[in-house]
Image 1 (tube, rainbow, N blue to C red):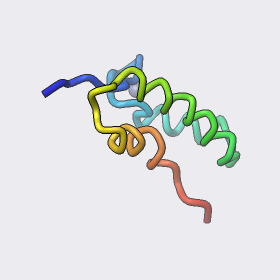
Image 2 (image 1 turned 90 degrees about the vertical axis):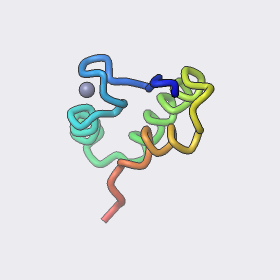
Image 3 (image 1 turned 180 degrees about the vertical axis):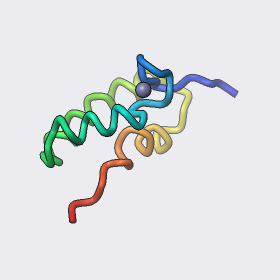
Image 4 (image 1 turned 45 degrees about the horizontal axis):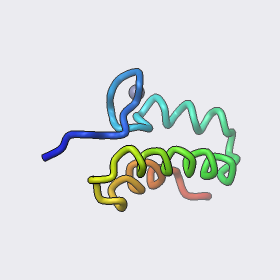
Length: 70
Ligand SMILES: [Zn+2]
C-alpha cells in the first residue's frame, strides 16, 4: 500500500493536522467561504500530488473537518 499523504510540513500528519486546523479557524475568523476557497487550492494540489489515492479520501482529509455553521 502506498503511504503517500498530503502531509503537514511541520509534524508530518495528514494536512491539516490539529494545530493547522486551529490556526486556520483562528486565521479566517469565521470567514467560512474564504476558508473553503483556501482549502480548495490545497485540495487541488493534493489531488495532483496523490494521483493514486481515492479522491473522496483526499476531499475528506482536506475539507470535511470544517465545522458546520451554527
Ligand atoms: Zn502539523
